Length: 305
Ligand SMILES: Nc1nc(=O)c2c([nH]1)NC[C@@H]1CN(c3ccc(C(=O)N[C@@H](CCC(=O)O)C(=O)O)cc3)C=[N+]21
Image (tube, rainbow, N blue to C red):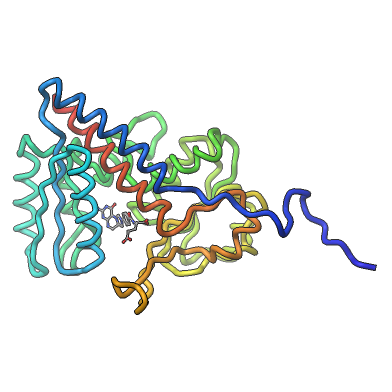
């Protein structure tokens, strides 16, 4: 006699997770920002302005920054791109940040990370005027995010995008168990805080966590942001969970005109039959990050009126 596997009724081989279309959702957000910018400039206010600072020659970073400036142009946001050589000194950057802080055409400042080894990012980021900190990583904004009584001027773009995507599947995450893998200042930690502020029960995991698969299995929402290809497997996922893949891994690929393709931190195929929803890479969290940056830049401009 055949032994039947016992599973929740709705988990079977025909089941497949919804693939969250981050690109489409990002486009709706960008359309909203474009409409708001148009209304603003039609009323005689100056367009929002975003300054991006990129140090060095890392090709993917150049692609990212170009994506950001192109998106600005499409939405009617002015962009000021500062491309600096690899050997730029801390002092030159400090002066540039000072100039951008006092430039009335610049409402948002983004310093592309990571910076070359010889520069000290924490100190530089703390010099940005917190009212122009569209990345939400100035210590003041990080502090305001960390306590539920206060509202930060800016929420970091990737965490804000992640919450937006989760809300598209589950509008109320109160009481749900969320596991965040990764504790970076720009993704892991602020994502955990944002989910906690939205009443999820949050566990933060990292490279020293013992028995990660076990902790992961109890999560209704899994967020993985570590930069390790194929790390999270289907066997780690609770049936019906929401999986958000923040990984941006460049895999060498001769068949791609760019010489690489992108892949996330999850073993996507093995998760599909188990999860309720999962974000793809590309086309998931990445486009949302840019959409949220545009939203933050628009909101920054409002505060200087
Ligand atoms: N201060 C700072 N703020 C950041 O927000 C920041 C940063 N530094 N350093 C690097 C990371 C990475 N990041 C991405 C944003 C969008 C995509 C994105 O749109 N990706 C597309 C694909 C792009 C492609 O094909 O190359 C996608 O996933 O569909 C990727 C990566 C922002 N970062």
